[in-house]
Image 1: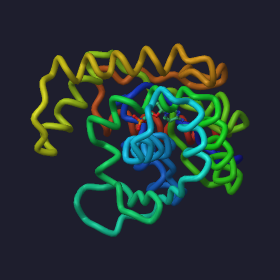
Image 2: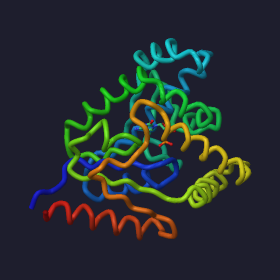
Image 3: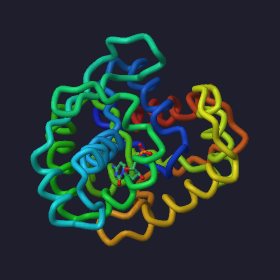
Image 4: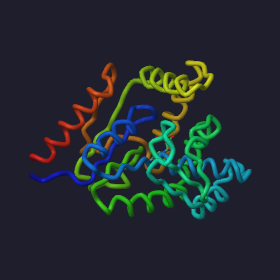
Length: 229
Ligand code: DC
């Protein structure tokens, strides 16, 4: 039996990648690494530094120099990890609407992606990892042992995201959540460098109408099937 050591999970915003990836990693005792965090942290750093998001050169320079650390959670407030930006806890700040608004733009810059991809590959090389993002199976870990592309309709993803935000106590309108996701999908899939798409050898799983347990069951079956090949 050849147990998959590197697992890539890609998919659009709010497709359940992080939730499923984290559960799978916990079950296997693997490292969970959510690459979206890095692009979010760079975007927050850009906003805080007062840099114009349209200024690709300055954004790229900053991306090369910021210090992003992701560590096991130290606070029991629903977080999956601690995210530190230049030493400061920004775990929740990177989830703010202002970051959501600009992150697709920042993550479309080639220089930003180069800097982040390099760091992600270093982590991937260690093995025993579940890495989630948009380009893990296509660019970051093209040799991953198992590649899964989690998909769901825009409406279903907007519903999940809306509920998540409401549960967190945020005041949002469903239409705004839907429009925001639609815009991010558009930028993520149409950018020139590493656009969001399923790798040719990825298993595509459409999760419309499935709950987390059902998706998890299916994903674990894929893991076992892959190991038995
Ligand atoms: O998964 P997320 O919503 O936290 O990702 C935030 C943004 O980062 C998303 O709009 C696209 C970008 N991203 C990316 O371009 N490549 C990745 N591997 C992960 C995220």
